[in-house]
Length: 311
Image: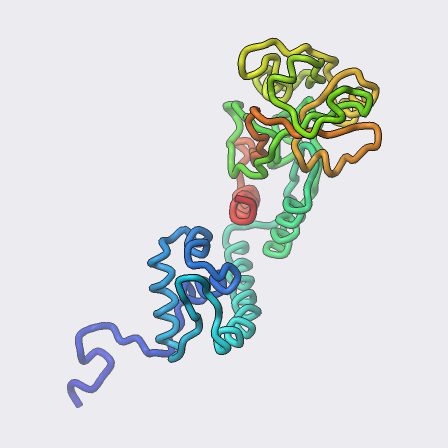
């Protein structure tokens, strides 16, 4: 009979039971953050859009999932039950989509990853998640020499690398930037700075600084071991080293001090070396880089994983 079908009103018919993936994703993130603003930041949408998605999901469910006041956000009992049941189902769905995407993109085969400094737990967790998402892609981790951050890429020994910034190599592409950390000064326990709780960048002018040897480019070496303080005062130059262990050995022998990021100081704990935070210097940062002419689906997929997990 005319006028009784789904299209009788001239618009698109959407059953109340239809589920929108974006609404489920929003609800899961909100259940973790319990804050509409932070949920919006994680999903790169406005706080108003988060509210809209949650209201829409609640209309589909037919009951409130979230209690929101001016002071706090919490899940209702139904919301708690729903998120417990939803999380494994959503993870399975995402895994299925990821595997299909990997097959379509050809994300399989070895991925050689270089890492400079300390492969901290956060980065290795991303590697593990990447392997789970793309089981056909086998990762291989290689430590890069302190004095040769870009050489393994140029020589095609690794496909991508996490290196200390800056990167100004014209043949390299810079992907996600992560692990922004305050800089620390490593000094011998016999050094006067060893008893200090903090240092200013201008203090660098009073002690030789262990530098980085070639073939690292000059612009990169200058950032890792500056030759002058922010005010322009000359920093005495100590010996140049090729590896981090060489540098720490010289520091322990009181041959000079060495600038390091905080995760490296935590990983390389030594009784004969003290690590003192330095104010007035730019934070150290890592960046994921690869050769422009060697970019492939595996590199792009890994860059997406790093960006999604560490930024």
